[in-house]
Length: 547
Image (cartoon, rainbow, N blue to C red; front, side, top):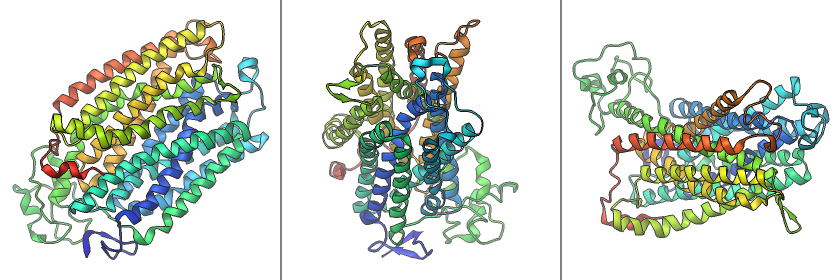
């Protein structure tokens, strides 16, 4: 049976019994796990590398890490445009994913050759005497980091959208499998992070950064080869957006713009009725008498674009609300380096402590889907137990609480006579895990559920872009606080060479205030938002659809 709107790797019509489905999704599951074995531990351990090996200050290493994550999410938006408008999602990953491999290869090379990095020294003991990475070596470092971010951005935006393409949402059986794919995709992120925080962090901290980063490069290459091996089984969708008609005038009735090509796939008028908002986009429906997907767009495609634009206020408010999460993840690792990291005879890396929220995430995802959702569904009448926006809001409240606890713990650490145990940080790690189960998954589900089928890559990119821009805003907040608290020869709160001569505890209170303001802003827009798809139960069989 052929499926309209999808093609195989050769451009031929696909057949359900041959292309797509769970078999094709397995290749993507592997890539999800492999990439997150690399991404998550390095994102959390990057501050340690920049501070301890490249000898950057506390503020510089933190802002470089948040900028790195922000750039990754920014590149994801470019990837979404290319994959939805010009080439397939599979080809986008295959063409640009290798940049991630090359980036980690350069980082491994710099960590291996002493001439490409500053001389070794103990930055905590020698303070200002350590040489900070500069010149050509700094250029190499930033080039490698942003090559990694470039490849990562293209993979992370195309992978979930390509996975969703493998299932027909209009087919009852495949619709359930599509929902299951997103559950396993989220689980794969957590499982990959769990493995990476044990394997990669151990390699980097005990066997050397060169070995750890080299293994990361090999793993990325292996994952890309595995996903490439599945190319005969993928369903590929190419969506073309009309752009050449932007200077033409609209007819009085929009239907007249497409009636001459009724029946063609590019020009068919679908069930979505024209709306009066964002009228300039309607020009894409004008038929100029030319054939081809680039000459005219359907009314449905135009209305789908409007749907995406309608979620932008929540995109902005979620971005602001997520600032505290980015800062907490970044500085909690640095807090861990200043504590007693021994558990008996075992030395625990601060980054490894993130295993606690990741284990909780994996357990919570299973419990939430199998038990909590059915329980809440019977009482609220919502398909997901709670709405996506309610789930996101719970995450933002959790981030606010984590900021307050982090401030109290940091104050206690600085006042302690005996070095504080690393496990004093466990409560804020735990709350960060709760925040990811709620706000992270909730945002991903919200953007994907509200977006039309033809713009899933754009929706996924909006999700990652919100997180990335939150990272950039976090960097801005650090710089503003440093500038505001700088007095004469005394540096700002976060400009000390270590946390012992910084005021991270006071900064956490600033983060808590920002989180509170962001949550209030989010509540305003969430209450005004009208769902494109009814979140209430519309079928009695919905309880059976749980994967």
